[in-house]
Amino acid sequence: MFEARRFIDATPDYLSAPMGAARVVEMWPERLLPELKILIMLREPLSRALSQFNMARGSGSVKFCLDGQEELPTFKEEAECDKARMEGCFKKYFASQNLIAQEGNASHADSASVDAKYAAYHSCMDNVYESNDRTIRYSMLMRSMYSPQIKSWHAPKQPKLKRSQLLIIPFKDVVEQPTVMLNKVSQFYGLGPTSFEELPVENDKAGLEGGKAMPIDKIGCPTKKLLADFFHPWTMQLISEMQASFDAKETPIQEPRFEGFGESSVPCGDMEMSFSS
Image (tube, rainbow, N blue to C red):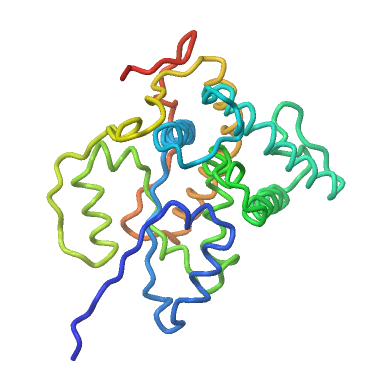
């Protein structure tokens, strides 16, 4: 008899990569697919986008939308560039389907179904990865648009994966209730109980060890509102789909009912600031 073994791998790329779910299903032994369990932690979209921006500033290894400038872009500049470029792709897709993009938020079209919006998202993400342009591939806004990404990981998009094989939990809950949430994760994976009482809230590595710049901690209030308005319809769609799965008892028993992210905790003011500088 061989002792049961568990193999664990982790990367944010699995969720955002267009081919991620299909490749896992293709390469995983079919007889073991029912045992596959996937943990997805969702961070409030604006906080996640700012964290990615700061990672790029700190590491110097990830390119920006505004690549090639002598100075590193501000968060406002990067957000506006990323939004404009991404919405240009959505507009092009909607036009090909005889749909008209919404004024002010071109990632949506007034008469488009949810499936059409998701098709537009995946079309743009496919272009992103096929272009191999790292300034596009690491779009901080598209990676924070969670609902079409999650939909790619279970039936009907992936008939061989059930929604119950995905445990989706808010990142904030893990930070605020580490013992409770990590025990849910352990139970989901069939592991023993954990006793974590505290997790780091801040990533103290950004901007250190050879990085290019200190992280931005406070953003401009107009930029915060711009992105809050941009993410809002995508978050509302996420809440609707998550709650529908929960109410239909399709989710793992460890998964709490998703109520959204609440207001972003990212502070804002008249100008961008780094509290670390």
